[in-house]
Length: 385
Image 1 (cartoon, helix red, strand yellow):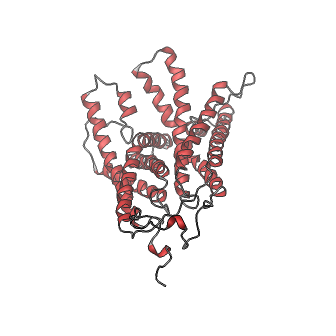
Image 2 (spheres, rainbow, N blue to C red):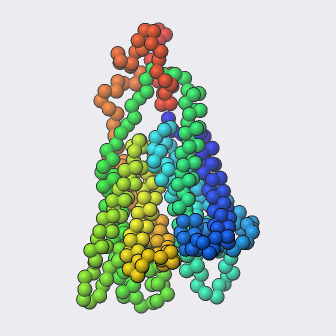
Image 3 (cartoon, one colour):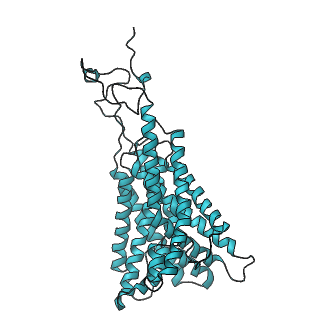
């Protein structure tokens, strides 16, 4: 039975929690930076307790602009949560809903941070504001990546509470229909291969533009957007691809495949397509941070690991989130197409609807089983001649 209005409270909870986290993390980050400046390095605060728009206002009060940005982020999360829970039967696709909502927080953080930055820019701007907006999107997406799991837990918990009350309102039935199942391994394999291919193709295109650039401004902007994708070196002499880049491509594919496997657990093949798209999309976003962090730490920690190293590592990792936000839907779409093609069928031992088998009849003196959230008494054969 698809979800109806029972999901609306959970969607509202997701948006409300996002707005509260936006304001709360801004206040907490500002307070930690103002009171523990000499004890905690500012780069560590920005890394593990990021401000929503990437800046620490230094004691400034919460303004109406901050509240509006928080409401915008919450609204985006509500829309994404609505899509993630669309047409899902009760108690199915929990991991997919969780990951899809997490992606919604990443997108909502990006939208809120960019809107907050646009409000501070006076147009026409004396300089190109594209880099400022890109930086704001990096900061907002990083905030969403670190805080989105809290919103995902809140949504799943709210769904569990509303589904429990809905089950109690249903009449008792003798049996529950077994769920349809789909083979998940083709979808997992297709998602991993597609994510790795997108990572390689985008890196090849951006590397070629950087090595053969003729207009510095636009090409530099492309390089900023494609940060984190595979690096090619088109020098006349030398190897175009390093061994570490090939290994990182495999890591990206494996991480996306793992996220896809989680998203397809208990996910019906005939429903939850939006859930699967958003969950695989988020897996691509999360997987993009691993190559960027590996390269940065390998480069900067050669001179020693210090807290100030995060000043160089963090911007690279944040920038790596942009390309999967823009192109991650490709991997999600391929995963849904494969998942639909490999849709399951009812198990062979399930008797036709309306004709219960011998094992379905209750024994004399034995209390019937628990109520089912999948059927009503209308699905059972009438006992009245």
